Image (cartoon, rainbow, N blue to C red; front, top):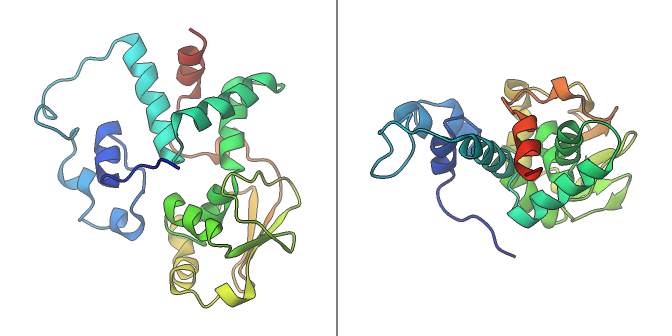
Length: 208
């Protein structure tokens, strides 16, 4: 499967937003966007003027990269969001938030979504006492996501759980830190997504 292998810090600089793609590094003065708050490349410090289409495209690219998806995957989520009842943009964000790899990240079992995706693929988590190693698995209200007993001693998971208070856990999730498990209390609400996202721009882009 294709995946992004270049520097994650370039993504933050390209989108002019700290997206916390490098975990602990993003909270230090080594963060690239803090040191070089302009787009990467030879002409990064020039004045960039975007057309209406360019603004919409940048917003789509930002959200796609935030959740670590390829274009085909992202377009598939948009199609599902458009087919569901309610606002297409909010449906899209809800579907992205309910991915298992994102839930693992949001519960604090991993420092980044990329790390969460890898841990899920390696079979470190169970959903309702069943092993699930598919990062795109959609959780629902009432589901319990737990670290396997044998995986509780994995250093990266243990360190991430210890640092969970720094990032916090959204209101739609309930974390039992001692038991290494979390419960989905409800579907994520729009206000639970604190990143500056203008989903309407994505809807306008795909509606053309």
